[in-house]
Length: 167
Image (cartoon, rainbow, N blue to C red; front, side, top):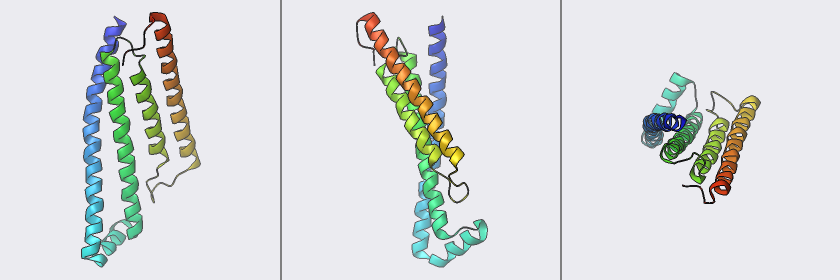
């Protein structure tokens, strides 16, 4: 009965991740288009955009570009984390056991992108703080530890059943 509940809940989480992937992809495309439009308008009419950004947001043109680039990096990391989470939940819902090499790889990749997302600041509004950096390292280490636990579970399963874990 617990296996059925696990499969149902992971399938639901996989569907939710699909929706979040679409939202993060739209945000990422929007930010890339905004960055492209900003750079293009700087070529066409250099002074107009600079004065508008300065008046509306109090940012210099270079700060605005850095803000957009950091936002694109954060959206890309979030997209990758959710994409691998979807793959993780999909693998768990389809496999006989959650202890497969695919689940281990997904958790490892999620830990990397979580770390990158946390340490990338939204400059100039939120600078990288020491606490945020420590939090990012802690999250990455916890997820990495979970990946190692899953890897160990794969090895135990292989020893018990005498066959490699299913991917």
